[in-house]
Image (cartoon, rainbow, N blue to C red; front, side, top):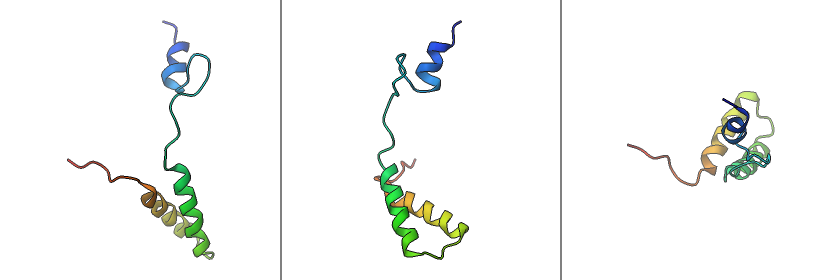
Length: 69
């Protein structure tokens, strides 16, 4: 079996001509903007606090809550 077509389509999420399939996450840029503003508000934040701020920015950027069962 030839794996190259499969890897192009599914492994790397690209079309046979090499163009990417899909689109980037809708809130990726929004989360980055929120993170920048949170870090700007706390200029003396250490690495641990910055990690907490990154998580908070991702939470704020979500458009809808996760599905629950």
